[in-house]
Image (cartoon, one colour):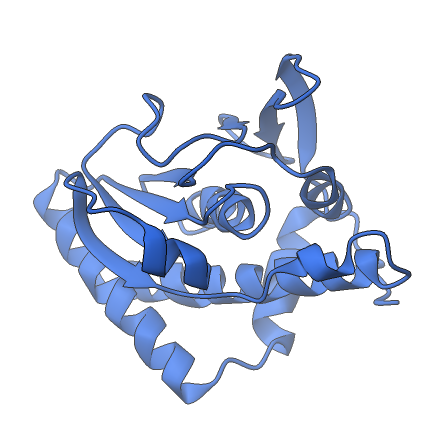
Length: 210
């Protein structure tokens, strides 16, 4: 099991950046995304929306959205962090738990047995993030936005998205395979750490480019 002596989100974010090794090809892709975000940010009155899309909007796309929400605060950027899927399921409870473990707070905004809505926050946050499973074109995902797909199915099967300013594919291994196994907690935490590290790299580049 990965030991986590962390009680705060900032520590986990910075520690991920220091300890997760990002390949050169991955850095090249993240830098390209950063350049695109920065260019559109500057031309859109210093504001941009980024929509993470995965088929079920349950695990990886939610992690991308939540860590972008944190990164925007950390780097003082006006980034609207969004996520969506090609179908609706739920913000998976294992995703919720792995984010809680590193200091995010989840308050029920609207109860549902199948797809509850959460107000997500962290220590020092000026605002909260509404988290729930939705399609990429849900009304809360105000367009236009830059699309980042996080799984192979989303990249291959997503329909044409006219609202997308640009579209990038940034895949992550689905932690779903560990559900119910002794390695579940470790696997989700590893995925969260990888995404946190890459969002640090990405939005640090955006900040440096502006």
